[in-house]
Image (tube, rainbow, N blue to C red):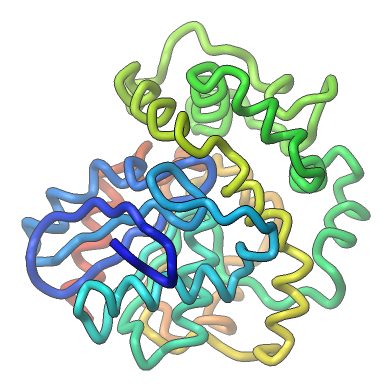
Length: 307
């Protein structure tokens, strides 16, 4: 499908009101594999794209082609390319900031928004990477991701091993993952698991590895390389609030929870005043909709039908 000059790969199922499912890093449309049938059965047209730079979608070469404005533009372009005038957006990990920002910038088109793992946040008081380095140190993983080619090569060296380590290490089935680079690499702090948890199969590992064989990790890493640029580009929305109806999912063992203030959940209504609820999944790690599909699906269907 042609979207903003990109050839974008999508997976879709069902008919009815449009629901877009936006994946995170390092994932693809496949991370929503458990959501298609339940949402389609509930009466929705479910579409999950490979986002800009990922898997089956084109990967622009220039780093500055991956700003949050490009990513929001892709969502709006996809809605229009599908022949629709409005949609609900649901995002996980990096897909969550894309979903939150799409709802913030285009509330005329987004009739509902749900975020998994990553909550909406206030605009930082200074360049975010500077603040992250000051708080977490130079070995924080988002700092490590900044140098073009470095993390790209490490993660692409053995695709199956990368997904096996990363997906298990950041899940609720492993010891709490570390957000710092050790021994010169991102994966060095992630032991190779002897067996996979119940929610992850060898076929899943194979699927992610096969999809990443086309584009590798550079496109997704370029999203991180625009963090400071995004801060500069979004100055005009300082203090703006997300007005469409919203829903937030989090896992009690998700490392992302340690990045924000301890009371971030209580303060969410200040950022999203039409928040319909928070789904707090006990023992769930970072891969929310993959680890706990039944709970996620039930809450999403209830939210969507209530719009």
